[in-house]
Image (cartoon, rainbow, N blue to C red; front, side, top):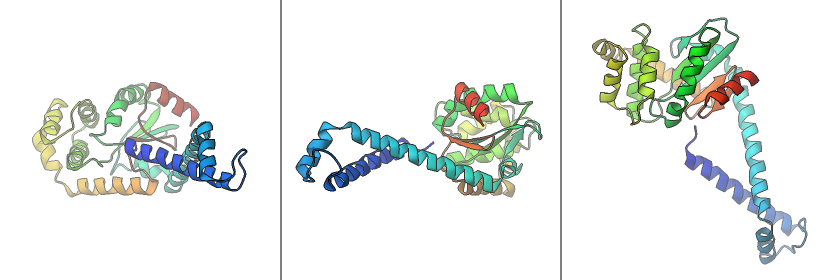
Length: 248
């Protein structure tokens, strides 16, 4: 999910653009009751503040539609098989499932943690009829990268990936090295083996590949979901997942 400052900047930018457009329209005499002077235009804007809100909303709606179209085109060009590459994704569910859910996540992402209850519930309910790909996408610093290395290495210990995923995601504090290994032990992993496996060159390759795939798809934040080929950036809850899987 994009940082709130980016969202705020976008909103401010849209509002400023709205002011520019209104000034230009008034200058051309397209707005009633204005002569094009700065004082008259200011008075008109103060009398009709709803114009800026309407224009900002319209611009935001258009931008979101353009972003969705761009994301859909990127996913289509890449092909869904790329998101179910076992070298980078932890994959569950039947290979011939009609429904697919991909999650790009970071263990230090608060919105990923917020999505965990819904994702765990949905995964449990649909693990026999939906194909899932969990792609760790560490973008929040060195500790996120270390957690990603642990997650990828945990795949070498059967049936431990989801246990570690759940344990780390339930933390309230930012993950660090001590927490990663403590949670790995809680999840039933052999920590000594885990540490050795984290040094394998294929772990570095997997992280690089996940970042390259995200870049190709235009994914720059977490969590980002791709549900039945449709991209959805941001946190999800039970209702959102139900709606997205029904609409896709």
